[in-house]
Length: 243
Image (cartoon, rainbow, N blue to C red; front, side, top):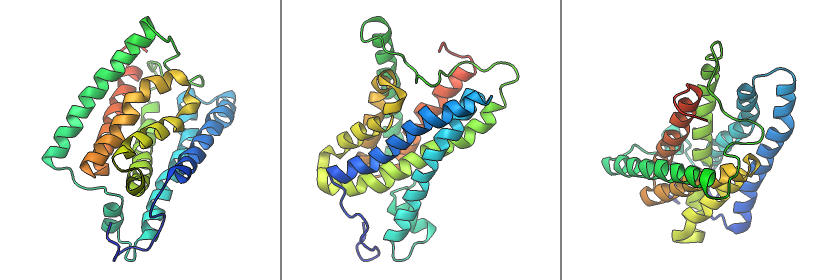
C-alpha cells in the first residue's frame, strides 16, 4: 500500500476486529436464511429465488463496504486506484497457472470429502437446511436469469471485501498465517448453512485466501471462487449430476 496516496483507514486488522468484520455479516446471513427466506417461501416464492433475494441483501453491503472503504482510504479515489487498492489486478500467466492448479485440487478435495461424508463419517447433510439445490423442472429455467446477477454479486462482493479490503490489513498482523485466519473466518460466515456444508466447504475457504496471499492478487480469488460456485450450481440445476 502506498502511504503517500492513502489516508489511514483500518490500517491493521487484528483478531478482535477480524471477528467483528466477519461475524456481523455471518449474523446477518443467519437472519436472512432463518427469518426472511422462510417468509418469502411461505408467500409462494421459489426457494432459489428466495435465496437469491435474501442472500443478496447480505452480499450487496459487502461489495459496497469494500468500494467505500477503498475510496475513503485513498487521497485520489479514481476507479483504477480503487481496484488497485483492493489488489484487483490483471492475471499473469503464473496467476492463471496457480488458479488452475488450485481449482483442480479443490474439486478433488471436495469430491473426496463428499465420498467420505456419505460413506464413512460423519454423514452430515450436504446442503443447507433451508434449501437443497435440485435439477430445474421444465418451466423453471428462467431462474438462471436471476441466478447470474446473484452469482456475480456473490463472488465479487465476497472477494472484494474478504480478500481485497480485509486480507491486506490482516497480513501485517498475522503474517504468513493470514490465509488460515481468513479461511476459518470465511467458514464462520457460512455457519447458518449447517455443519455438513461447512465440512464440504473447508478446502474452498482455505485455498482461496492462500492463493490470494501467495499472488497478492484478489483476481485470483475471484477466478477460484467463481470456478467452484458457478459450474457446481449449473451441473446440479441442469441435471448433469446427482444432488
